[in-house]
Image 1 (cartoon, rainbow, N blue to C red):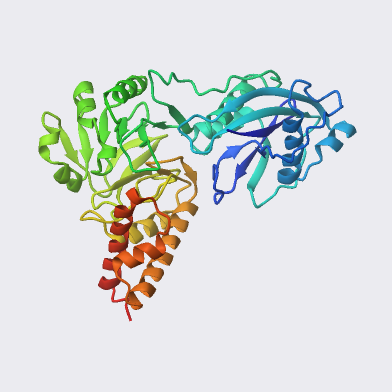
Image 2: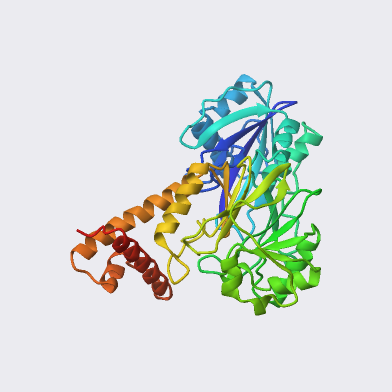
Length: 444
């Protein structure tokens, strides 16, 4: 596991947070404290100034100095010598949970300044930075305007209670892995559960969500634990929040496995598209009340904003997405993934509709995008990149078809080194591209 370090700059009343650029590969669009990875080249020389925590490894502290210089263009050593920095404290360690593909042991170091410092930010990594009170940052979080990992929220809550807190903070995700599934709330009001599921590798979990205000209908979205043991853990976790209805985004099993059992246990109805209901079959839903959803249906409210249904076919003909009217987030199902790639193909897939659905969400420009596999991401950059990649793949296939290559030969050219078990899915995607190419008469 890699090590990393975060600089928690504070004054007696304020704290400094940055917003990471939406195009970054790790935690894009997240509010965070500055920092980064510890490198093998970071010095192990002991730092002599009395402010440095003596129990911390020198390599961690040298990484802190380097990262602050790179991200903020601030010389921490000079700040100590000049008296701008008046205290440096170890305030805890957060280890990224096992469900996240980007795992780090992160050291949080509080750096207390005499007054707020105007930093010169690295715009390649940082969209903006801001000094503010912890209470005002938390107010924005509760308004759904801040995307943040759980340790960052814990930091803000801690400093909201005591801006001068300077001892280690417990930042471990509060769940028992033996009896519960993880739950995080990176966007307030969007509770994200992460049960193990029978999904497409390299992903091994399908995100399930509970959305809806306390005075509105609460929806459990895509419950799909992989077995009865995981079902028991999942039920314990979702019971802490409660819900009124179950919504299935589309018919692939990793989005609804055990959903009927959960509906019967909690005595709640289920909702989905007509296509999803037809493909799964009415026998699966016996003894369960079912309602069919369509484009534009308003299903609940999130932080006071109406949440409505969007039809986003392509990966699956009946796939539904949902978003509040203020576009603070857009739950896109399998339109994209942040772990692995989306398969387009088979009778339910359509490459042209997939292009259209991507374009539609990009134009709606939600503040954050929520996939069914992987972490929530800021902005639409991942959607834009996905569409661009598919367009480039299409041009490559057109060229190969023009050279007289058959589908097997195309597979061998554009999916070199792909694991054998994934080849059938790659073939489906190539077939979907070829169908789109022929339908649009793109071959010369």
